[in-house]
Length: 161
Ligand SMILES: [Zn+2]
Image (tube, rainbow, N blue to C red; front, top):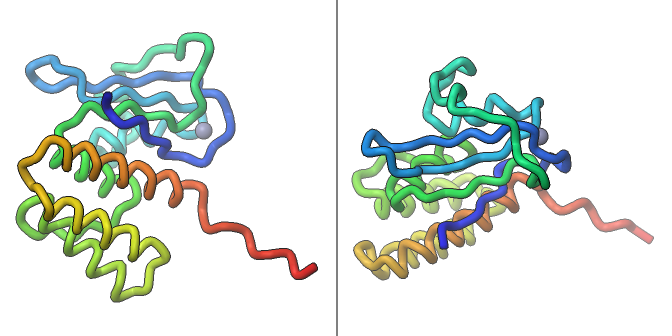
């Protein structure tokens, strides 16, 4: 099963569904977004322009509408890692996707990012089997978890009761 990602912290139901296919017409991803977050479909497709042609592969979301930000990601691991970089991950370009993830973990540690330990763990998993499909699946699952955590923001401060 491809990972299901949550790319916004928006509580609204999605209104529009956008799909992206490869040049060979295999499904790369399908994202469900509300009107306010439509621009993320173009960003996911790698365009800074909201009128990118990817947004034309958009239709009304079928009932029952999933929550805004639900992304079914069918991409291969290197492509999926790139898409995380487009949305939230500070990913230095450092050769392979495994090397880039390690560089991202190092960078996050240097700036004391809250998710630095999580990114270090993801890089270690990636390095344990760069060609192993089970490792790819685990890396994508962990990245999806870190992404959803990032989208929902830091935990609220404790109530000094
Ligand atoms: Zn939304």
